[in-house]
Length: 118
Image 1: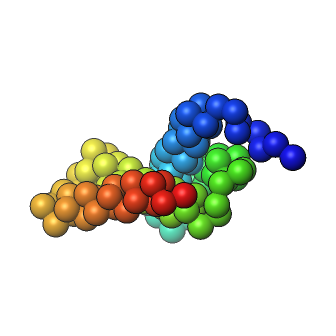
Image 2: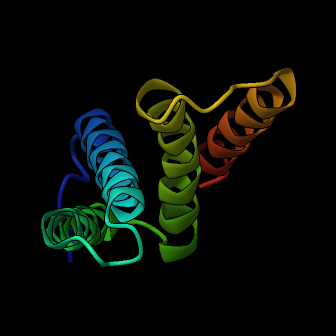
């Protein structure tokens, strides 16, 4: 009858943000280990990849409780794209061009619009 957290929408929103951000970061770290696994040929990075992907799925599943699937999924994907770019630049010596940073700005704008439209 009553949705969990309905009396405290601000707390519910903070929890959603934390869970989706942690899910996205878990997926991105999994992607980093995917790169290190060299096509699943190295055991430890491969196991870490699967572990972080599983953790991301669990966090996203919890974040989705009481939220729309489509917007939750898109928010996680957007945050994952941002964190993947950051990890690539910081850990893999990839370059961040003006075009990539403009894309990040568009992703952030899209996430904000999705959350405003709920």
